Amino acid sequence: MTGNTLRPELGDYLIAQARNNHWSNNRLHSACLHLPASEYYANRPSFFGSIHIHLDHIVFVDWLYLERLTGEQYLPGKVGNELHSELASIVEDQVTADRTLIEYCETVTPETLSSTVSFKLLDGTQYTEAVWSVLAHLFTHQIHHRAQVHDMLSATSVAPPQLDEFFLSSDLPLREAELKTLNLPIG
Image (cartoon, rainbow, N blue to C red; front, side, top):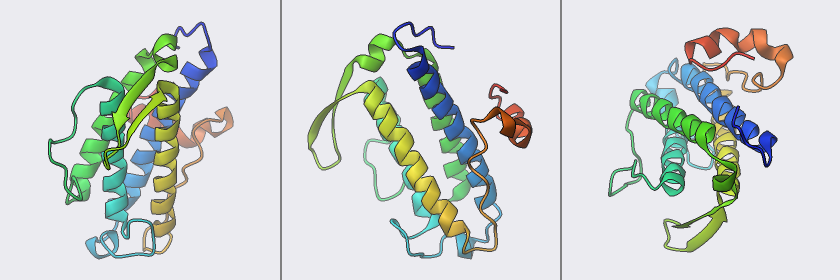
């Protein structure tokens, strides 16, 4: 898949995580699109207080880390408290971010994975991290906040979707149609 001769399993794992991220976001967004606005924007006990703000935060951080990894600018110059005011625009932007992340992971080399990237946090603190570590953190961040949205959905009129049917071949029949729709490899 990656041509990674140093550690092929790491490159393949990162590609699989990026594809899983896209699939999971699609499932979660599909559920959220069925929510009435009153439930979608409702203040809830959670890290950010609403489903909307969590989903907006996920795509914001995805773009922020992609900027750090690629050197490209994806976010507007001045970022406020939220990027998007509506779910439809979050979904559209998240699909683009997901595809950008998949492409990055599919083309990254072993040398790039073992190299470092320096960046400033939003508070100005300077960090230097290994690229593979930044990617691992990004995937953990996505999973963390999707789980919070998943939990918040359980208190709404829309059931939270199953999000752990991606990696095992025995689960393939449960996701095959979605993978085709998302133009992701099957199997």
